[in-house]
Image (cartoon, rainbow, N blue to C red; front, side, top):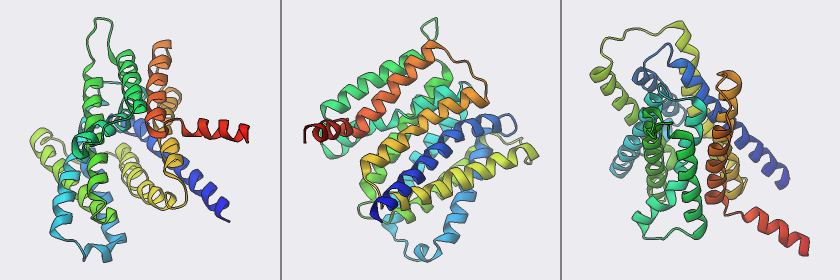
Amino acid sequence: MENNKSLFADLSLLAVAIVWGSGFVVTKNALDHITPFHLLTYRFMISSIVMALVFFKKIKKIKLEDLKAGFLIGVFLFGGFATQTVGLKYTTAGKQAFITGTNVVMVPFIYWGISKKKPDIYEVIAAFLCFIGIGILSIEKDLKFGYGEFLTFICAIFFALHISSIGYFAKEQDPVILSIIQMFVAGILSIIFVIIFEPGVKGVSMESIFPILYLSILSTLIAFLIQNIAQKYTSSTHAAIILSLEALFGGIMSLIFLKEPFTLRFLIGSMAIFVSIITTETKWAFLKRTNQNKHT
């Protein structure tokens, strides 16, 4: 019975990775019909409102500490999605999928600054591989770092800060409450940026309704709930490996659905980043277990 639950959890997390990977393609298409901060406003406000309705009883228990932590996490969340969404106007979805995935390599180094816990040798090797991969994917022929790739790299830093801050605050606060607050904060910041940077845009076209609902309900709300439930029945290592496939699925889907060019440079750069993600997330523990099983 436990094995069945674990298998179902792993398959559920695989579904989450596929949905998150497809989010790059959906967002790329959406930007043809809606401006970046309008898209983020709808995404975060719909997600936070629906999540608040689903977990209404928890909202009554919100404390001042939750609001402070949720606000900071929400700023990082908005920063990540803002730079990612704007950056996607200037780069391909495939490149962005892999560069965004580098946030998991950055987390140990950011957490080092918070907790004074030094990264291990796997995390150092992963960081080296990761930055080689980013260079191969992003540096243009004239040795310039593309604007879209630069914004995506900044987005990866924001997401690393977001993950690290959740890891820090979730020990004391309810993660569901933190999620509701952070999404609401990101939604309010999106509205402010719409007023400042996109004041002349009015209405929502029919073509943008599906991407808005897909990103807010499926990519954000449902994927979040599935992830939280599934991780109760599988190991952190399993979860890390499966969820890191988001970058791979994003790259594959961009090649299939957006007809983005498949080049040797894209293959080498993306593989370097993918190996770095697997290295930092798993420390190749599954290979050690395989070797141990052979000797027993």
